Amino acid sequence: MLSVTKQRGCVVLHTTLKKRKGDDFMRNYVGRVHCPHCARTFNFKVSKRAKTNIMLGDYVLKRKSLIEDFEITCNECHHKLPMKAVIRWGQLVAFELGNKKLNLAEYKTIPEGTYALFSYEERQSMFMGEDNLEIINISKLPLAVGVFANVFGKRWRVNKIFKEVSATGNFDTFICEVSLETDSKQQRLLILKDRYFPTLKEVNWRKPRKTGTKIDDLIKLSRYDFSRDKEIVLCLDNINF
Image (cartoon, rainbow, N blue to C red; front, side, top):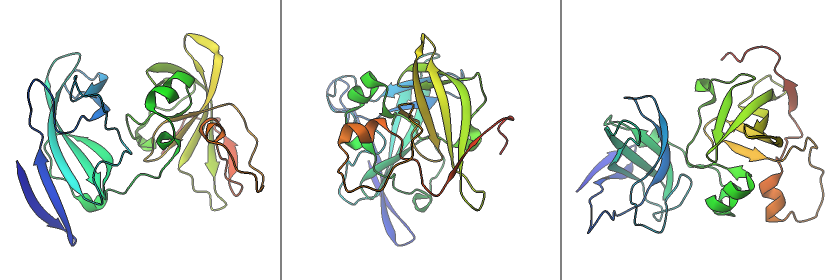
């Protein structure tokens, strides 16, 4: 089913996913959502048979903007949940829960990162890079030392919290030292940037030097690119926004 509207000079297509034979769908969206009925967070996959997964940050259409309706079932309480996939200029930029009307102009494309260089399974096996099942809003995170963050399907304990602060005092990124719940020797930096994916990097606090040397993809995946014009500040108190 297809309908067309206009938002600020942009033609927006609204479609509804329909089943093909079996449980195959037009697009196999994969992501993470918080159920409003049972308060559990779970991973969803629209089609169990499809071999290709479409995740946040992926490009699925050529320069088109699209809002697509689909439905998932909570793994825990089995409630049916209406969902919307938001595609901006060909890129899947958001999953929204519910039937509310969306303003496409409020959505921006997601900056390209190492998630485009390695598959989700490769990043998950190394505990490195972006977990692009969800996009975070740092103002809504229960961020504190001792809490656990779920990244790549594992629970990571937050041991220290830092923030990157500009010369004007602004910040949009937290850097957390974390350790795996089941193996405390497995440590990472958890990068929490507003409106981006939770990201794991190796524990390496060196800032980059200006060199002409080309950096290979594995280094890009594993090392966090600290900004040379920002200060790293340890958070001693509770995080307040």
